[in-house]
Each structure stands twice: as structure tokens, then as C-alpha cells.
Image 1: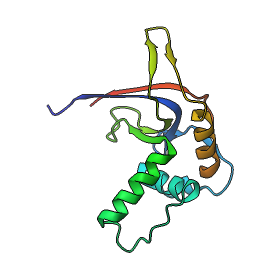
Image 2 (image 1 turned 180 degrees about the horizontal axis):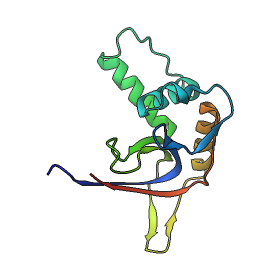
Image 3 (image 1 turned 180 degrees about the vertical axis):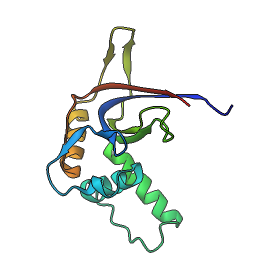
Image 4 (image 1 turned 30 degrees about the vertical axis):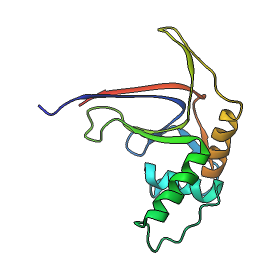
Length: 146
């Protein structure tokens, strides 16, 4: 009772997680050993890839939320958590690019029209996070029941 299915389909890198292991190697400061969650990754990317440097003294203000959302949207990235944390299934984080158009969705392949900057956005994010994935960029389907 209370169990449900969930799934994430994203185009990017499966970064894994602390509990089951990271799917990347660090190329700089190992920030991920201290804190590895969606909010922290988004804040790192905002700080390093945008002009968003609002004072943290009032992150509940409307102007803070609007400016943060605008800055985050400009990156064209998604940081997605998958799975559940009660050891029923694998859990982790996916760094993905936003996909606006899928041409063909079939059992054998997915044809996608990514704009030319999609790879550049993912590369910039990896450099900002100082990590190098152990997997190739591609479609990730993370499904879980629990």
C-alpha cells in the first residue's frame, strides 16, 4: 500500500549518487563528497554559469525566486533526481539538457533534434562542476516502483 511507479526520461548523463556510487570522477574540489543533491548542484551551476548573485539574506522574497528561475531557465539544463531512497531501487541524479522536439520515439531508438548548443551546455555544466562522467551522453530511462 502506498507504492507507485515512477520514471524519468532524460537526455544527458547519469551522475549516480552517494548511496550506490558516483558515475563520474572529479577533476577538482570533491564538493560532491560533502553534499550531493539537486538543490546544491543547481546552486553551483547558477553561481558558475550565470550572472545570478543575489544576496542570500532573503531567499524567500518574490524577486529572489523570479530572478533565480529566470537565471536557471537561461541555462537550458535540468538536474533530475530519480528513484527513491528506501533501498527499493537505485537512486541518483541525472544532469540533462532540455529537449524541445522528439522526431521518432520507438522501441529501438529515439531520434531527437537537439539544438547545436545542447552539447555545449552539458560540457559547460560538467566543467563548472569539475566532474567527468564515466558514461556517454545519451537517453536515460530511470524507472522505479516502490
